[in-house]
Length: 383
Image (cartoon, rainbow, N blue to C red; front, side, top):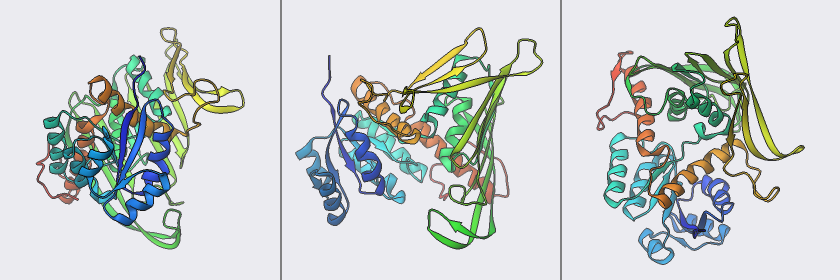
């Protein structure tokens, strides 16, 4: 039986509220209905409410009484994630939280505890591993065709918790990390253009490197530079895994990436490369319908990941790019959990762990590269 759309409020007026979340929510009318806006200041709440033609509030309790949302999409300034996330849960909302779930582990624990007491669901907008190229790789790994993944690398594929999440996804989110060894250094760079800041001049980068050891002997390697998103000096983008029966390497310049996935040829003497195919709804383009892996392996010659947001009927849907599909996947995970009573597919504990590994890397670096065992003391003041 068709179900009524779930009522959603956007809690916060950051840029992503208007350019990302509102369009995504309104493009899913069978799933959700966007009903209201909350902001800290009257000016920002009014501006976003009028832009989206929605009732706006600075009083969250009043918003709950008058518009009765079930889900809150928390979209606030970076430093306010933990504070406003807790506020939304305490108001009675199931929440989609921005990344990181909170900057300090104790803040994350407070959100998780508050939600558990109220029987509410939490999903976190960690979309990197939900992008179509990552989803087909994860489905191939899950099929067992690669055997056991021994080592996983993030090499500028995403900062902090984003990069840690990509790295952990190949090993498996259920595999427990044991310790982190980190190295963090600052370096001066030649004068150049910063696309995000829109200025030209000298820059300083922070390089972060970490070795993560997992139970069972698996290893994660993390690399990032603070200018990795917008510097012509740091154009590399890669993630990879080494497995029992093959390997996978993403190589790229910025967002222009290529996937190289390989198994073993039948004679055991050469790599057997997997072909990844994007299937569109028309021969000349349109929306993404599916990612298809042609493996060359007789035990599993073809594996398909279907885009859950593919247009039905053809031509009557959104032609979202990969990152929008990833964020919409976070929303759908929460929607399904609220409707069906299960848990989100990523959720607050995985989000907390990705942030914990990031903090452990920085703590290890401050201590001269001494390995830091996990779990961390949640009260440690690590930035």
